[in-house]
Image (tube, rainbow, N blue to C red; front, side):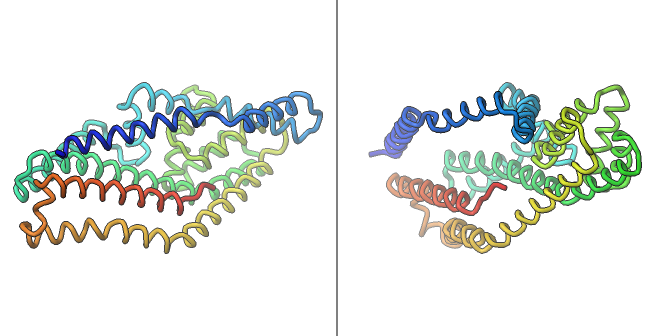
Length: 323
């Protein structure tokens, strides 16, 4: 049996499994019934807490990130541009594409000169060229998000002090943009500039929330929307939000500390086979060269990579927690 036949059989089995899951995994009837009961409770209840919760759900539904949905489904180029913008580096889509092509070409040439297998070299070069820039962009996005979340509670506290001193919301936003450094100051400066050229505060905040995609900032936007609909002390509301965000950050740090050992073990276990394979191949290519031209060894190697990938994915999900 050739390697092509093995790949076709494996792809067919995976397709059958995916179709079977899609056919039998439907919406939960219990969740749908619970949703209808909550809708009736929100509609007919006279409780103040229930009304506030209903308005919160309406505000969340009304403030969906439309830009992201369009960019993610209608245009992959726009979705990539949004990802690059979230890094804060000012990279363009063309620079990203040229970098990916350059890395893919370099890796393809190096692997081909070492192994002599054209298709294998092209496959490895394509995977590495598409994967490394993606991982770099993801790392920079997470880094900027963490920097934003670290300074955002301080920015809210500054807003609270400005509101309690009698300043309007727009003036306090300008103070935050000038006093807080890092991504928080940059984003609030963009908000104040959009308000200055005639955009409403809701539109300016929503545009920033759609572009950043950070839950903490979405909480801030929803809090302002709820306060404008229900009234009340905005300074006190923002002070409570700041306290909630600080506790949320503390919980994230605690989870990161508790799962750090498991993550390190997963990284070592997942990377060690590939590192050993590359080292042996680099030192003695003839000893392990059969994985590049022998059909049975190629099938075994691909199967091992698939199972290793599944194991790494499962371990990553086990140590990943949503707050």
